[in-house]
Structures are given as structure tokens and as C-alpha cells.
Image (cartoon, rainbow, N blue to C red; front, side, top):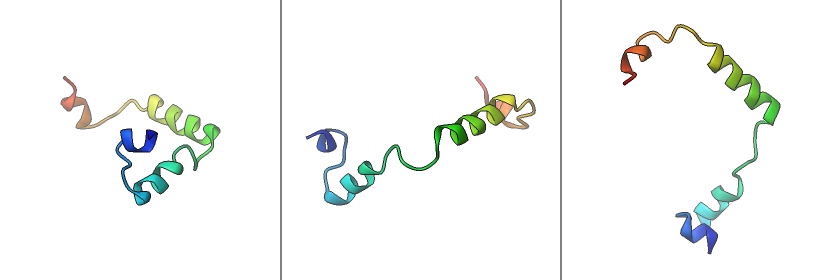
Length: 50
């Protein structure tokens, strides 16, 4: 029922959903987030802020 309500209506999509939360460790994700937060020069992206 949860898969269906989240848009995973087929077996194929349910298989994808079962993989959520797997992959990179929290320490690797934290390190990547810290690098993004430390970024000061965003080039043209700064112009897109509204």
C-alpha cells in the first residue's frame, strides 16, 4: 500500500524504492554537504537567486 501511495505502482518501481537509503555513508554525504556549504563563488548561479 505504501509503495502504491508513493507512486511506485509497478514491481519495477517498487524495486527502485527498496533501494532508497542505500549507497553512500552518512560521513561521505556530510563531507559533500560541507564542501557545498563552504563554497563562496557560485558564478552565474548567484544571479539566479530571487
